[in-house]
Image (tube, rainbow, N blue to C red):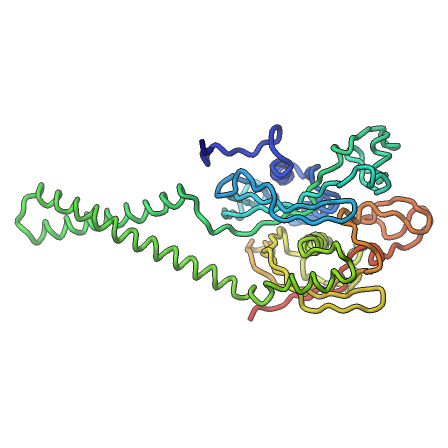
Length: 426
């Protein structure tokens, strides 16, 4: 028997990792506690966002209401892997409710039907990741996975590999224009009932004024007319409304079309140097880096950004929704490094001090990486190891190794952003 839509509930106790992360993300907006199900980069990006909200005197609340065709989950959408890790895209449909407050006063609210996408990363073989450095789930200290299983040297906590993995390594939302059968019936009924009432009221008033028929006869005739007119005209107007909405959404998508479909060409070029490379992995990485840069008070302090100062380009952004569109512009290889530029489209929520508003922004982003180094799908800037002395440290808070003072060049290990420009829509 098919499960009714209204019975679908995302659960922390009996639910999947997807559901637990979604509920933890709701909790984060209430308490500031970052989701334990998210990896270190997600947690750091949310920490930076929370500081931005506090600086603006704002609080933000998320609420996810399961709805739509994939409310109860889609087990697997796409997956990619390297020697140690496998990542899988999972999606669920929901109504996303977002509210912003200044003190007790609600300053902004929006409700959108969304597709909620998460990347779930898990280990292939636990023994292969023993030397990988990971932050202790209890105290946050950077230590190896093997050490965590034997006992964290800083807090003494022991963890099974299942306590550490799988993790959500990225997430984003894009609008879901589809309707369920139930939603379509409600939508259609509103038009039919509205049109039926208009036919009935207008016909009744007109007949009373212009005919000598009895009131009972008029009411019976207009009731039949209202029902018939409501069904026909209501269906017509509802269909016209859906067509208009489709054209409106298509118009908003036109500016994205030149960037769509570039992933295949990009992957073919990149796989010459990194066979395990995938477009999904790369877009996840770019979005993760951008969130850190957008919410950092000074991006120059981050090891993931090596470009010129960005000024006040991002200072009023308080929330970011990735549109799911990232397009390749240029790809070059110079020696051991590849340099890539892409267009990224984000729906950003701004607070400029006088009002809160959402705007779609287009950015040209340049990134760089040493292609001689194999891609590590689970790499996080929060668990670096110094190449000089081997000491582990949190590179989100310090660029130099606390053990030997060596400055860490992140581009030798992973992607770094070298330039960002905001582009105008034409």
